Image (cartoon, rainbow, N blue to C red; front, side):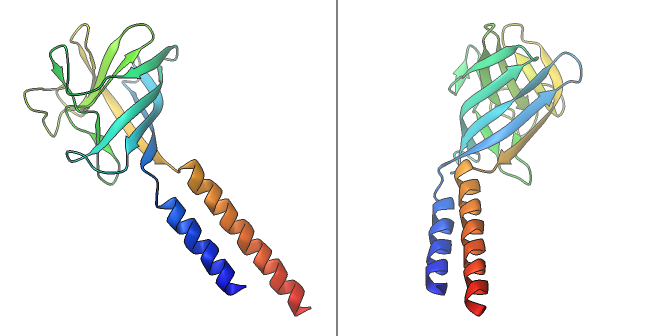
Length: 174
């Protein structure tokens, strides 16, 4: 029985380590006129010093759905890279992430540092740049990696296996 449990544990661990993308919950706001909530899908393998964002979903100001992530490196005269940088909590560089909303707006959420070649995004912290107007609004930005659904299922399977083995062990001792 112990050999079987060890095999199940090894399979569960190997399966959870094989993911190639991660999901991030993100939000940013200036506390009054800009509020964005959504999810980012990013690679798990670093590219150019960060994790490449490959998809975005969410809503801007409660009623304007995010419809598309725009592919880097440029849009009009703006440069961006769609990277989440590694760190204790993930963050953006001045290239930031560029997306389109259902109303036709194009927005770049970005940081002032580290600098993106030939491009500045706001004056401090994070900014949302409205590409149509060129106006930058200072915002707070957070992103948190979400557990993968497969990982959650694997954890539940492992707990179920441990419970089953514990019950069988108690039954054989009686």
